[in-house]
Amino acid sequence: MPIDGAAEAEALHSLLLSDALADAPWFDAHTHIGANDPDGRKATPAEILEGLDRAAHGRALVFAMHEPDGYGPANNAVLAAVSASGGRLEALARVDPNHADAVDEARRCLDAGARGIKLHPRSDAFALPHPTVDRIVALAAERRGIVLFHAGRGIPRLGAAAATLAQANPQARIVLAHAGISDVAELAPVVRELPNLFFDTAWWQVSDVLAAFVHVPPGQLLYASDMPYGPGLFAAFAMERAGRAVGLSDDVLAEIAGGQLGRIVAGEDPIDLGPAPGTRPLGDRAVAHERVVAHLTAAVSGTWGGRRPRAESGPGPAGDRRRRRPAARARRHPHRARPGGAVRRPRRSARRPHLRADRAVPGRHADGGTSRLALRHPLELLRIVERQVVRDRRHGDAAPNLQWRALDGDGHVHPGDRHGLPGQP
Image 1 (cartoon, rainbow, N blue to C red):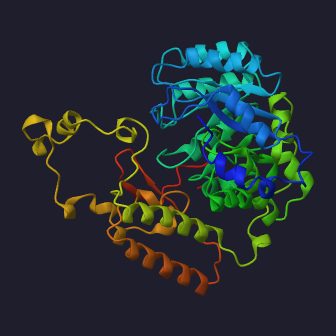
Image 2 (image 1 turned 45 degrees about the vertical axis):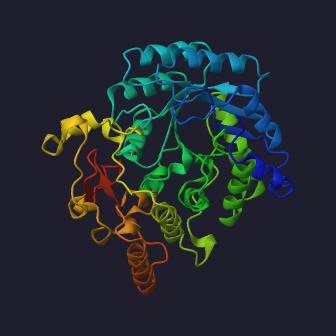
Image 3 (image 1 turned 90 degrees about the vertical axis):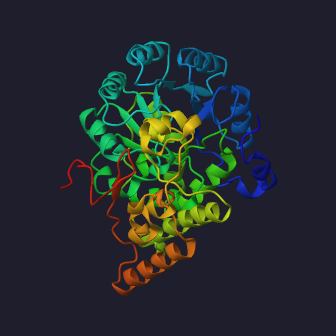
């Protein structure tokens, strides 16, 4: 199956390909292979290698896509692909902490040459903190290995859990995928004190990638593409542009492109490339507000396209991407059950009143949370954002402090919950 966006990237090949970083040791931190993911995507090792070639990149970490029937055979396929790649691919084993053999499978793969572990709290439906995850990270720390977490919306406490794991296991290399999305701003005050906590750049939303470059020290950023969900050409272009926007030099960008990951994979200590640039190099740009606008645009587009907005509910049965069966809904709401398994829908005014747009502050969901809102009317939410931007600028705050509202597994809002980040009140 072709890599998503490959045709568009090919049309812009000469514009996206960087001459300044042509000699960088490009090393993609995030690619997948597999054929059984419920989302329908498929990728072979040959397609990943072809994607690397089109972007003029050398190496990549690769791991299995979601495998509902277990990861043993999929990990074997990844290890075989690495063995046949001539040194261009390195393996991360994927395990499900809910399975009794998760630690044993992780150990087996590490013994077979895997460089670390990939964990996906959403697709494998586990919450954090998790005792098996603690054991997996401790195992990786013994090998100075990588633990890559899928990061994004609908994973409560991920940022706090990652920081706690990094603090407790200084020899493990904890990586939050997709630029941290929902957690990068929350972790900004402590990430400098956690040199073994990293963020990969495998994400399509430019404002989110830019936020990672603003908040995270450059030595803790790792270039990544997310193939086959996006082409390396665009991912590298977005990474380079974000880095230049915050004033990073070619030498530092080359380290983000792959030099730092090469050290990590070799079991060496990462190098310090200086503090996070902050917002000063961006002048009057307000990255937080750009993120609000970007995610509102996605939410509004979906609303106008006829999709019903819904609250993200996190890992577990409530956060599973599959539709709940009528019988399951009936068990949860027996008073609404109808004969034949159908469930009577509540009146519109009764649906999730705690998430109505007029009771939510979208700026507090700027880092990836706008789709959690049940939009009553798109323009109403846009007016709220406009008032907030005007108010922030009136008080001279071009980049407001984002105080989070966490959503628990049932989608309820908890104002001001910072999840007890290490070093934070």
